[in-house]
Length: 427
Image (cartoon, rainbow, N blue to C red; front, side):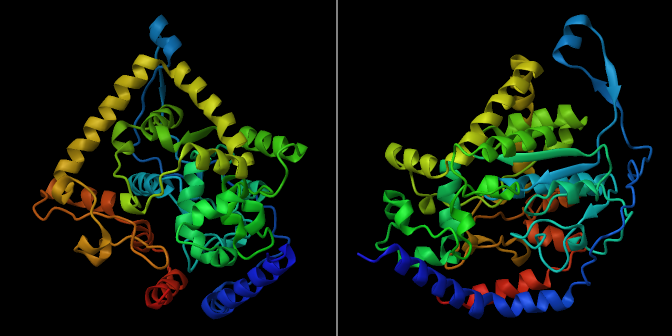
């Protein structure tokens, strides 16, 4: 039996090989292309909001359940200053598409990364990572992957910014993360057998190297994304402190398993319209690549990701309290309306009415990003006879994240370079 020290040494060597051969040159190029990082950036107050307020900004009745009872009605305008904490493997690309379209509709200012599609993840977020940032600049929306750093984010956005995020059942998230990122985590290379996920969960402490390259992808990834220490013991008081800090900061934490209900709560919180919520599910995996977790494997995955499970359970409770306050019948009615509207758009926009495997996607511009070694992420074909009134909206709703970012003016040359390297790898 190989000793723990031996496995860590091998994992470290594998990580060195991967980092040296595949990413070092791109990291170097990124550093050379990035403006000099400003230390001790001046503290220039951010304006209350820099949003344009054109005529088409609507006001609408804002009626909660108690107001429905009393017949009282107030009015609200859509909230446009938004921090979306984009967690990994949580349908966040689908929500990003919603945000992109909303931002374009209202001519909002996005805080985008430069040269890549994330804010130098997994390093903690810094304002200097924002494209063309200068102290005092105003942005409305920030939504790309980052490792959350609350003080730096707060210095970038208006004081009335709405903080939103999304969580997923940690067992399902772990399965998805293991599939998508596993080949980028060197300690997984030594796991024997074809079913590496099952073998890992049989004894995760045996295989896991917490100091290994990219190891954070495979333990409490949600907690890590929020800027917390993902290797803490569950009874460490810093776990409760971390969950409390997230609760205090974020006005709405959505749940993947109840995505439509989440969007309705978002509409209520931000005074959006139903048209703003329309979506097609992006970055879905084909069913044959999804490992079906047995009850035993699910229990082991939750035990291994115990902090994420505690985080999820906490926000699951707060989520249903919000649904109850919204009104059960009202929620059911609005979800049914959203599903009806989405089905209408699918009939108008999507060839065949459903997602297809990567090999069947006809347009290169509609090809989603794929994990190393396979093409498991599905996409769509745009109908060829879409009427002029819907053509632009259909294309936007179906557009994968990287293509949409490019259309919004983000230079993704490092991401694209890595994509070319990925495509020629014979894994």
